[in-house]
Amino acid sequence: SSSSSSSSSSSPTGSATTSQIDIPLWKKILAGGTSGALASAIANPMDLLKVRLQTDGQTVKVQSKQYTGMTHAFLSILREEGITGLWKGVGPTVGRATILAAVELATYDEVKGRLVSTQYFEEGFVCTTVTSIVSGFCCTVASSPLDVVKSRMMGQRRPPPMVLPPDGRGRSVVVVVEGGRLYRGMMDCLVKSIRNEGISSLYNGFWPNVGRVVPHVVIAFTVMENLKLNFG
Image (cartoon, rainbow, N blue to C red; front, side):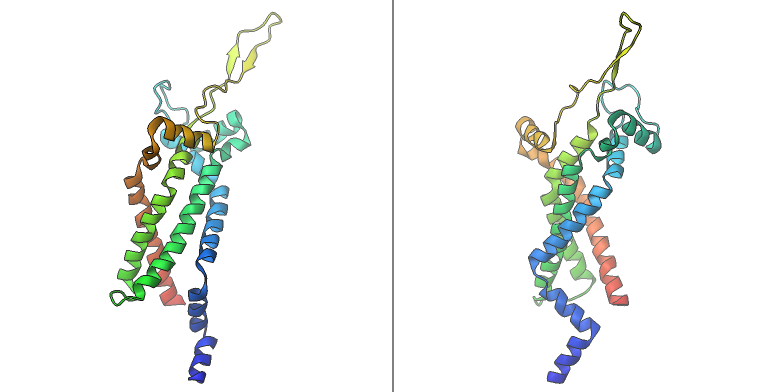
């Protein structure tokens, strides 16, 4: 028995399996949250461009679209809002990604371990699919409030500057209007959303979000499990 245990611990598969089982839940949450936060912070400009292009022209006051494409939107934001404008909404974006990644990785490992320990499931496609669906649903429940805040923060634009008529010396005066912003920050958006629309507003679009997140999680973990099975 000692030889078998030593051989299993020395084999790559055995050591990987043991180390994976021994990883505590808090480390899984920390690893998932950290990776999600870093990735979302770096990719925030592209997320901002996506939201701006998707909501372009939706307001009543805007008769035509402000952006002709991604490059024009990128340059317009740089010109009107500065380089920091590309990271508008980075707070709720990082918060959402941190929660989503942490919940996704932690729930997948925990739920899968509990299912396999019963007599009803064994390692395979069915177990991976069921676990991924549960993980994706938990991710959506946990991240939806920050997802709503993120979209609302990114969707608001800085009003264009007003050019006043020339003064007595023939000089035009450019005035930047700041009053058009609805939200001053992440917490302001959260508080106003709850106060004006109720706490249920933080789950606006919940089921479409489930329809987006759950298939993504199922595909990601199914591919991951097959890669582990075939390539170690």
